[in-house]
Amino acid sequence: MAKKTEALNEYLEVKYPDERWEIRSRTGRQYNPYHLEVTFQNERGWTYTYSVADEDKICQSVWTPPEGLLPNEGMHFEKDCE
Image (cartoon, rainbow, N blue to C red; front, side, top):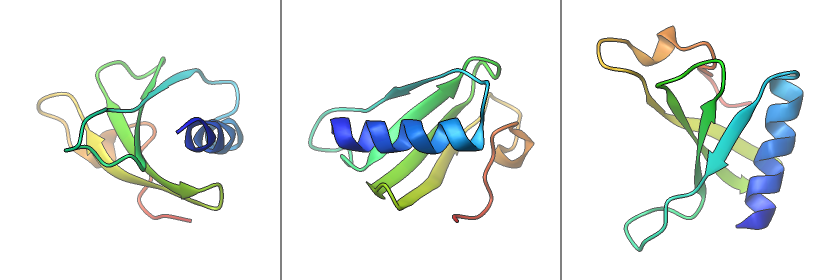
């Protein structure tokens, strides 16, 4: 899991320089170990989930906005995977 977190951190440093975030994974059999949740310091209440297959395959796959908002209203919303 440390390698995936490191890969995602490097991805975010390039995509969102000068910003701060927290990366965490959910544990348990019901959670996918390839999914990491990110919360950005400058966007409270939002959670973005990234699928991390390896350092070259990182994709924002789930968006959890605050109640009443749509995912595409988020400052860090990524529509398409690169």
